[in-house]
Image (cartoon, rainbow, N blue to C red; front, side, top):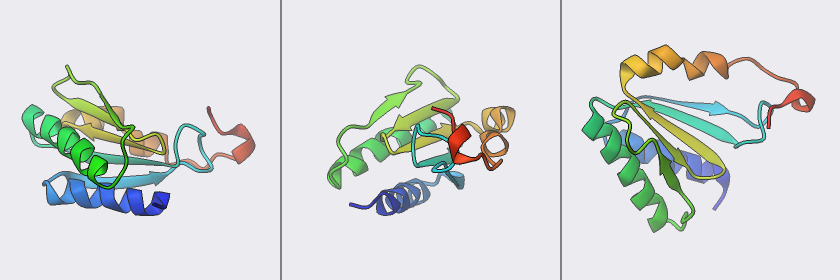
Length: 115
């Protein structure tokens, strides 16, 4: 499966499960940590947990097995690491505080890309 198809599946899974303000940032010329970062908001700590677990389950069904959840003990943030795509799921206030969209919006020359 192509990385763009996986990204599209992730966005659809999040949207189908009522994630809010889903944003995707292309990291290919910004960092070697992943190709994309998907950022979404949930409405409560239970919603964040459910979104992360549903995402893992649905990705397994399409053959993406090496995913893991970071922030299991957090009530306001979850990270799903799919290796090529990093998915941040935030409570809206924490998302605004960290403002990853702004942090990653600047174009960085590939030779200066962060590892």
